[in-house]
Image 1 (cartoon, rainbow, N blue to C red):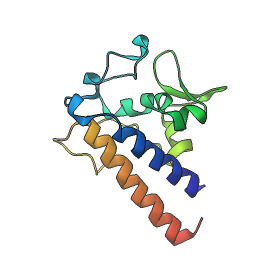
Image 2: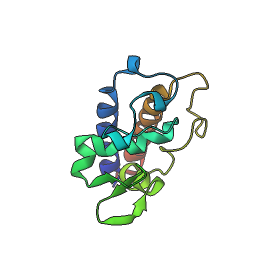
Image 3: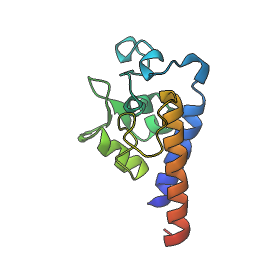
Length: 135
């Protein structure tokens, strides 16, 4: 299971890196107009990152879609939404949390930077667990 979480985290890092940081103001709400317009959702928080997953091919192929409110869910599994999607994909429910919820969150960074830092830190933890536990 750890390898799947590592693969998904690596895919998220690669996909997130394609979003140009220079187009991002401090909050994710500055990225795009919103999900109603067919663009990735924005809610003014790093928590919005989860709503971006359906727009990345890797996660769309895994069945991640958006509900009516723009939150990530798994197609055919409405009980798997929000933090549960984070748990299934990445092995942690914490990646979609608000700014400042994790020790790795910068007080001054943009939401784009916070999401990338969270993903990179989480990947390091997963790789460490894989080396230690071997699964």
